Amino acid sequence: MSFQEAMEHVAQFFEAVGAVVLVAGLVFSVGLAVRSWRRDRAGRRAWQELRNSFGNVILLGLEILVAADLLRTVAVAPTVENVVILSVIVLIRTLLSFSLEIEIEGVAPWRRALTARRSGGMPAPPSGWSGSGTAADDSSAQGEAPRR
Image (tube, rainbow, N blue to C red):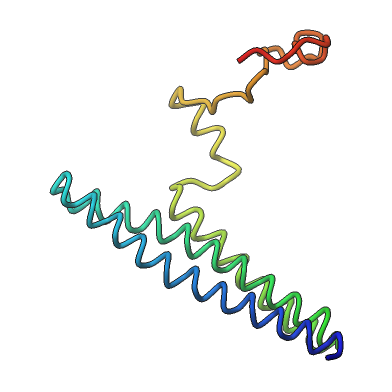
């Protein structure tokens, strides 16, 4: 078996994994939505649960499929035409991922921190972080074990 044939099989494996992720994720997302609806009898909340969970599944599936395309283009048939086609596919999938993330989160990624600050919901700092951001105040920088 040549290197190109092996990489073609690896790319096909990634495509199969991407398809399985999408199908299994759909089933899982529907299950979450049904559980939410049974618990609260709130159709709007169940719909939101379905949209959020399946949107994240689609993002993961797209990433796996992009990896398969990259493998196929770079390792199997690295021609200029294939690289251009891959670039267009990656651009389309990136734009799709970006728009899905905005749809799921409700805010553009570069506005997420600003929105959290305005609402008072700042993300939690990393564990062991003292708050000033300087290495002198960080317990691990002073040779101490991080506080938990």
